[in-house]
Image (cartoon, rainbow, N blue to C red; front, top):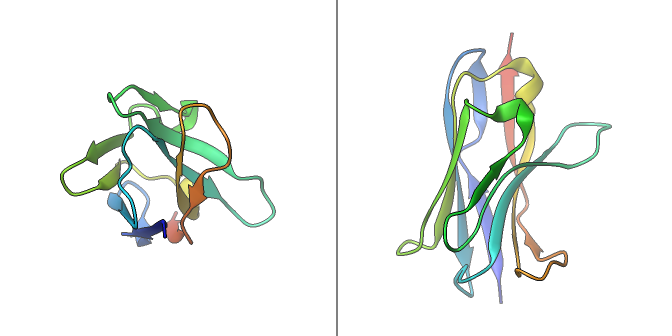
Length: 117
């Protein structure tokens, strides 16, 4: 069965850095689109960054120039390097893997990122 597991969250000061990892078990990412999303209390879940099988990348405007998404297919892992963190980046970060044609795909359980001012 497909399982996604996020790790790397924690508490950091504003201006600091974290690297999140999303590992897949049960299957490989293959041609799926893999994205990082985030959701804070009382807010809607939003796309942070995504990467395709051929490494086409999109970022939310709020994180451009600060976050970098990448994938290592040999390790079946997708990363989100987060630099220059701001308090508004505080949220639970989720990994998602879905087919090219769309649909909900699979979600991980999330990892908490808290940035102190």
